Length: 186
Image (tube, rainbow, N blue to C red; front, side, top):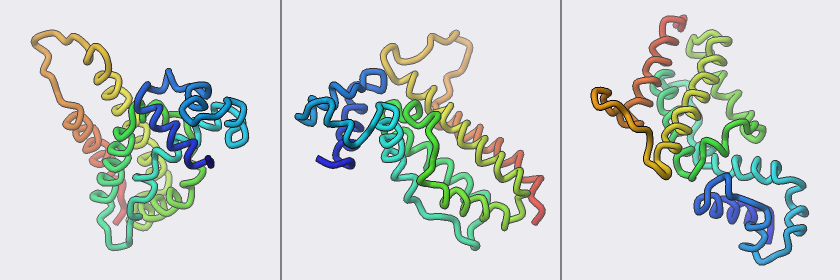
């Protein structure tokens, strides 16, 4: 048993039972150890959840970084889509990620910000666009994952059109990019 295997098993538990039911007691039982032995790797459940959030983000955290040749709009949209796909890979992925601090990803975030600025996006606008897109994505996935659970979503009035989550996400993402475009100086 090592830190990585504990996190991997914790993510398997998350996928099976959901975030509310994840407990160190259940995790220890699955690993065939006593609960206090988990404290060797994680002092608190909060530390475990942070490690789980970081591990769950690995597909997005290892996606290619932008290059100077990239179009900022295409990159921004694909980066945000990658984030959404990664959150959707895990049951309660948005809830697990919400409120986590991407400390292991700071260099990548700085690279992304520098890329946007080099493309003519004012620094403050680049920061706000990345923050808005991130929060928008987490909120969208949170709603999508809540609707796909027991009960399968809200009862809508018959005259309200049903829009699939991906189309709704894409429409909102376009609004963010379209709102940022006029601020770009080059």
